[in-house]
Image (tube, rainbow, N blue to C red; front, side, top):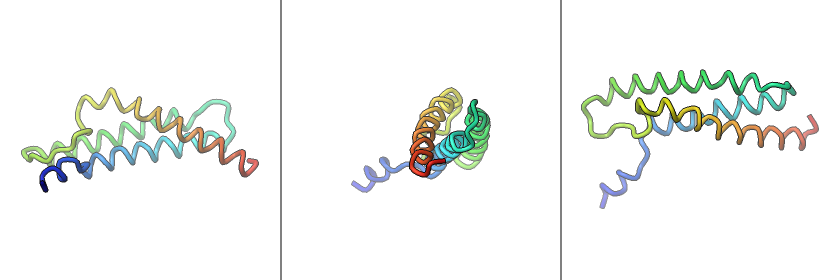
Length: 107
């Protein structure tokens, strides 16, 4: 029974990956809304930060968890194609939060 609980638990690197991309994308899109630029410069530029985070975690997980059973599930080579879509979801959330904050505080 204890193995079932451990199998459902997310790996530490996977959670760093998801939370890291979420923070990068959300803060950059909120910065775009609050700086009142016509083009989302920070949101487009933050995709490089997301790929850098993924690349660093990919190298770290391949070196540290090379022969172990407990490998991260989301930090794989094929995730290269999914980082952009994950990033877009968090950018949309950040735009919504930024618009809400700008309306609440009249910015």
